[in-house]
Length: 295
Image (cartoon, rainbow, N blue to C red; front, side, top):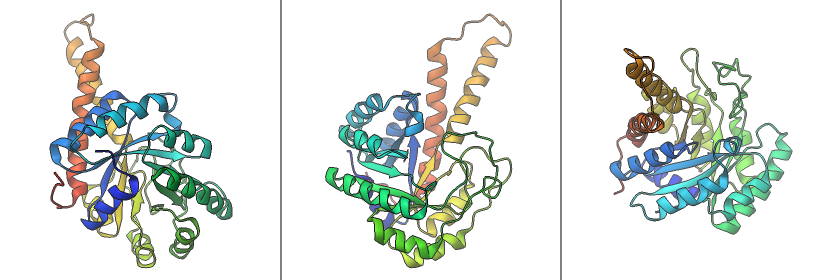
């Protein structure tokens, strides 16, 4: 079933778990996400990032995901990820998205508040949930995957707990994306997360919190973050990297003895699907944090 971002994160809140939010940059990713949600009984969020418009257009993603979700036994949210233009957000809502992540983190605090207020009203008109970001991870979604292997190198600014309280009250958002040590892209070393930032935010606010740049984090740190209030974890870069590695290995095996051996497109897509399915199943179960399946 298709559910709103607000409702799916409230489910996570009630069960002290986090929902995996995976991006829909390919048909294989969408299929794997829906299949894993149905097989495990845990909810999932399928996201389309504004920067992925050139990979898969939003008017292709929306009918595909909404059709699959509406006839699925699983709880599925279709969320617009890292939207920086309100006109694009409105287009997504008109196409059936049930959540929007408006990203004004690169703007001044005052401008971020103003535009987030508009986004909140827009989402309310469509019955969708709104996620906003406060603080900065430094690296941008869809940018150089190697630009900044740590939050400090990427130029991150951690979310201020006191400012978070004012931001939520001023905007009317449903869930808050926080900066506390993760980055977009690939880590060159171990990520160092500041859980004290999360705990201090959690003391002041009563909305679900979000981890961006969630792939590449250890299972132990996922659980620490969930216990500190994280209810949505964005997972993309490492999932598609593992799928790419699997395709490379498959091609290597097929051509090891005969460099001219045919490698068909469906060989690559089926290999990618299997890898994504395995990755999504693992993180969905880890993010469940011991909670019982919904179905």
